[in-house]
Length: 179
Image (cartoon, rainbow, N blue to C red):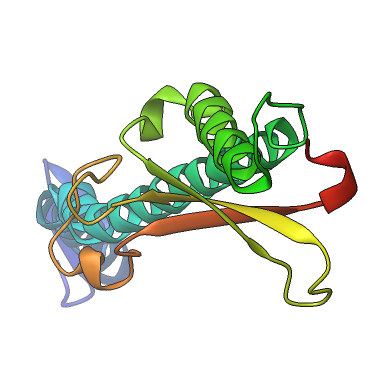
């Protein structure tokens, strides 16, 4: 047997072929150790990506709920202002304006969605800023979001959240039609 042939499993093979078989075995062994090193990579990647994904989803849901609550307060304030247009029996203009303001708050609080049912209503009869000869009723609804969040806040997320949701609507009343 010369230097270029070797005996493998009882057969004579060339050196190049024997070398190829050795490297194939080493490659297969390398693949096995490589796959063993890859075990758990998906779990580590998930552990790194999930918190970011969760914070993004939490932000989307939270700001969506705040937007829905603000829209609900706006709708209720507008309905309260419309209720101030209804006739209220009274003996004086100031008593009629007060009765209309009370009716406005009553209608507004009845229209508030259940998620913001702790909102407070303030209806104030005033003279209109743009026309002093007219009377106005301003309906303001305020929801204290800081003390009653719609969903629990994550740490540091409360810095981006509003402390209160406020919505107001104003209706103009002609003094000749109040009584």
